[in-house]
Structures are given as C-alpha cells and as structure tokens.
Image 1 (cartoon, rainbow, N blue to C red):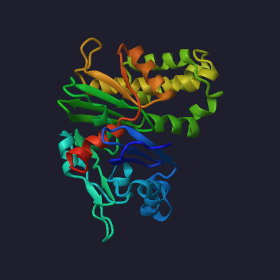
Image 2 (image 1 turned 90 degrees about the vertical axis):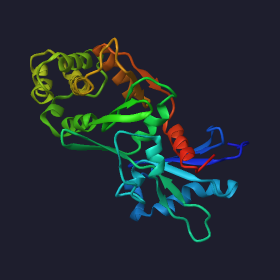
Image 3 (image 1 turned 180 degrees about the vertical axis):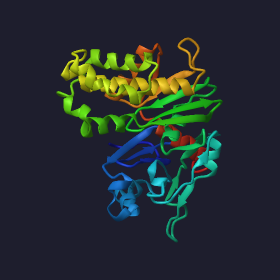
Image 4 (image 1 turned 135 degrees about the horizontal axis):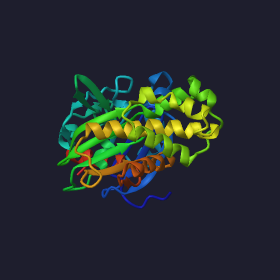
Length: 314
C-alpha cells in the first residue's frame, strides 16, 4: 500500500493471542495495518522488544520515529511493563495521566511505547478487571452521548456502563469459556451431534434462561434432559446450551443494571464483528431489546484520543 499522508501515530492492540497495529495520519485515518499471531503468551522468552522491532521497524525506516501507544495485555504483569489499574469510575483523562512507558535507548528522544492502563471495579466485595476493552469503549463513545452500555462478546464477555464520558461500572461473564468447557469436558458435550447453528434450539435455550425463576446451575442439566425427552434434537443440543448460557448472561446483566428497560434503557452497543455479534443480536431481540453495532475497531479511535490527551500527538 502506498502511503500518501504523513504518519503521526502508531496504535497497537497487543493482547493475549494477537498483535495488531495501525499507522495513523494526523486526522486518525488508517494508512496501513499489520497483524501477527504474536500475543503476549506467544512471544518466545517474553522478548517483547524483539517482536516490537520486528513488526514496526519497516514503518520506522520509512517514516522515522513515529510515537507508539498500545492497549491490552501488554500492560499486564505478564506483559512488557505493567500499567497499574485505574479505579472505576474514570474517564479518558485518568487513563491518559497514568500511562506506563517502555523507555527507549540513550539515543532515543522518546519512549519506545506508551501503554494504556486497564481498569478495575469492586462490587459486593469482589474486584473485576479489564485490559483493552476500556480503550475500545472510549473509542466507541460519541460526544454528548446519553448513558450507554457496551457489550463486548468473547471468551470473557464484558458489559460496560458509561455516563457523561466516563466508565461507571462493568461486569465480566465467562460465558464463552464456560460453553467450551461444558462442550469439551462434560457429559453435555458427549450428547452433542455436530455444531451446526440450530436457530430454533438456540431460541428455546435462550428463552428458557430468560423466563425461568431458576439460575443457570440448576438449568444446565436440561441440555441433557431436553434431549432425552425429545424436546431438543441431538443436533440442536449444541445450540440449546449456547442459548441457555447466553440467556443467563443477559438476565444477570439486566439485574445488575436494573435501570434497563426495553422502552427506556441506555443505548446498547455491541462491539465486535462476525458470527458472535449476530448471536448476541438474536439473544437481545428475544429479550425485547434493540442494539447498535459499532463498526470497525474502536480501539483505534480510543488510542488516538488517549494519545492526544497525553500530549503524545497534537
């Protein structure tokens, strides 16, 4: 790709499983991007500096010393430099004031890398944390936006409540990991015949969770009994269990964010793409809620906002 504009910032999303980077001009336009299967757990001997130079030196050779900012697990205790958590509620200002820095060598006139801190939140005596998702959420925010709940589906899904440009509250659900464990390591998985998407079975499981007075633990076994009594075909048990877990996630989140009502709720934004977003959209529709999907990768915008507040760029 031929680059016409003058690059001003390199933004990195460096997580557990992948390394993604974007070369941005002064207006935040993506000039070029890179992606590598080099998340922090896949870096040999935790030699993050070698990966950094391997991936970014082609840009540095073309454009000189462009400042770099990153979010994600690269700032965890297992990462390059730990960026301590910022307590919730907080906004962009607090994140920009508490960046962690990887120093450059004696010849460098700036740090190699600025790292965005994660966020923590306590509820009922239990801490919760996130790294990387906060940057996506701030990137998805618009000016003077009403209260918003961002949902970031994944192995560990996040629900993030924002008000007046600040993150007020958030929850983590291990829905994706729970489904994988039950599918691969439980009696429920032994009953599954294939993994085709069965819409009817998914909806049956989702509505069962949403409408029942029982909790998830007492309903999980129904993935077996519904098959035994021919209420769900064996080919549909996979989808039924998925719906049951996702419906339980929505139900618990609705309870936490009790202001949610189908007719007067905060705006619901789904952040992500692909099939998983479609599955969540279907679940929200069954529960009576409409959602908006954030296109692209809002981490790019979030990183740029933080870089500007920290005076890394103008």
